[in-house]
Image 1 (tube, rainbow, N blue to C red):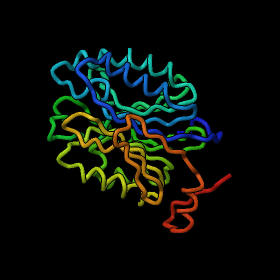
Image 2: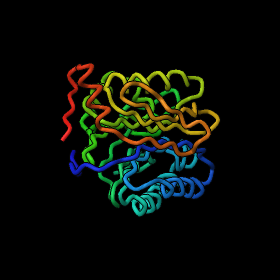
Image 3: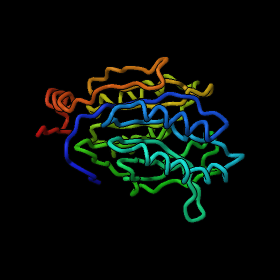
Length: 251
């Protein structure tokens, strides 16, 4: 899917913040962080960061999504916002990816690989294989893997050729090293940027980061908002130096 091939200088942004019990508080936090970012920022937020996996209040979480989307569209001019939200569509509930740009949802799909150990299969309907697409916005090809999807080789294959892979996540702290290893290896294998965003909640890894095509990772640490300049030439240089068939032309 191509939204625009017009190339612009972008800043990659990884967010790290805690999801509270109040949905409105979480939305205010997210909006405040987005508003602090520069024009032409590609911003990745943690998985279901506005509500968490609030299964006891699933109806309220679903009802909150339209309000949140309206606000996020309003702050998305000259920005790309990537996150997942709990959404009800045709009597089914999904953990739904949203890619928002210039006031519109330009791409949406449900999470395909549900984390059965946290009972996601009980509450959510999975996407089908055909729903996955790489989205091109302003000359940047963006793929998204949602949390548990990082563990599946077939999902990695779908990302081949992407310039940026976003990974909005709610990753368990007991498996923090897995998150670090997967995201770094994903960048090295695909010779691209990986923007990883995990929650600051106690049960999560808190290992939000941005990893470059050579596998060098910068971690958010104490920063709620980590920013790295996107450099298309860095992708091209790596793909030409270590040619594994991914290619990259610079116009």
